[in-house]
Length: 263
Image 1 (cartoon, rainbow, N blue to C red):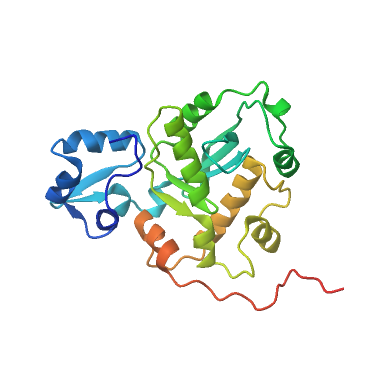
Image 2: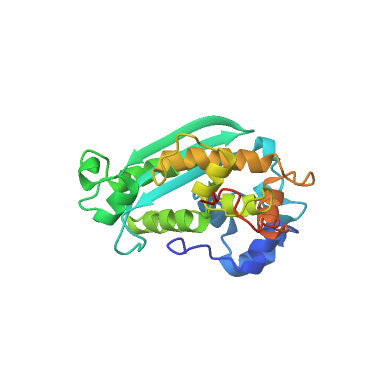
């Protein structure tokens, strides 16, 4: 069961984040040993709790000020998980806007395409003394814990890390996740929503070195905090925030690029 992604269907996941899911529906999908399944999921970063007879993601009841958000960015030597790997990973964990911990590491690799080196500035030689992928991912998973996983265009980072964990024999991520790009589209007016554009437009990270993991994490963190200041007042919990980032109306984009300088 645990060598796959999440085993519950989309409808069940929606109910866990909103109205709750009855025990019989969970058992029907997971089998009779529900307690074991929930305990294993908790070890993978997902906590499900019982409330008034139904089951919910614990983040349904977790106030934003009490939640831990982990801002994550990775650099890879390619986009295909079967051929490529993570070469750098960085993360900053925050609670109530305050940084509580940081994680950063290069990852050993034998080769990096010159094109990737040109983009990131990372060569295979730079990683020669770095720890192996399995060590870095094990340490990162421990660092992440059950925090909410936040990244800019989160699907790539989350999926690549999760598949990398499975590739080395560890279970995949099950943490709740949030896309800072989608959140920005609903809280900040901008002509574009790429991280480098937003950084320039909102002066998020004057010392940014784009396509280096910790630099992009710092930029994403500044973006996340700015977005949080512009939330709808009815967004109170983590699940409220996740829903808002996916379903709230996107802000109208300017017709002209304010950063475009005519000659």
